[in-house]
Length: 110
Length: 122
Image (cartoon, rainbow over all chains, first blue to last red; front, top):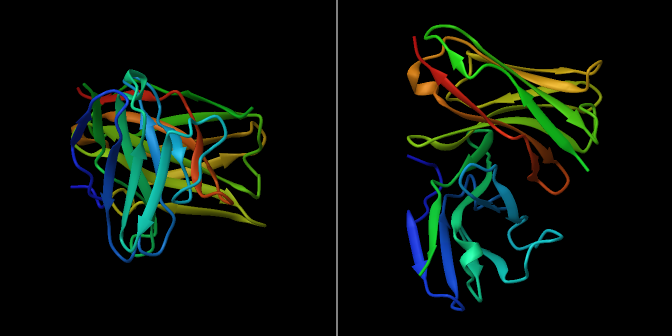
């Protein structure tokens, strides 16, 4: 059972927009920045959004992030087949004094 | 460009310790804007942060509650690397283990090692 809650899977058609949610509490998302990671099979995760809504250099601007209270979201617009991957949210938890992750969401591009 | 190269065994016997090393290139283990982390991933536990070491005038460690008491993360400044030791391994510790750099100004894991699949089995 992960500290942060994500839907196990989402799917959408190419060129459409999809959002992935991440729900936490006041000790984690409510008080700290959220990062989003993309992971392909057999590869290490790669950050696609940091500090809630900041796009790292080299990441497509089709990715965007937002946060409100104790929830965060990752949005991907103009879906492409290459976006098909697992996505994880992560943040610091003040109560646990450590990093916590969501359980991951598998994105399928139909 | 920062690179992290992991090494260590892929098979550990139950009750034995796991020892992994992560060699850093392109940065320093003593960097005051980084922390050096170990993270593992398994189908049953997902991504799980294990702990970190970092230098801010002196060395600090933070460890996850789930492994506290069994884990040690040590820096080695002479070899510019850091290590993980996890004692009393059980089959539940079977996972892919990653080392990762945390940029402490940006607060994200921006560089990762290649991962090491560790299986706990007799």
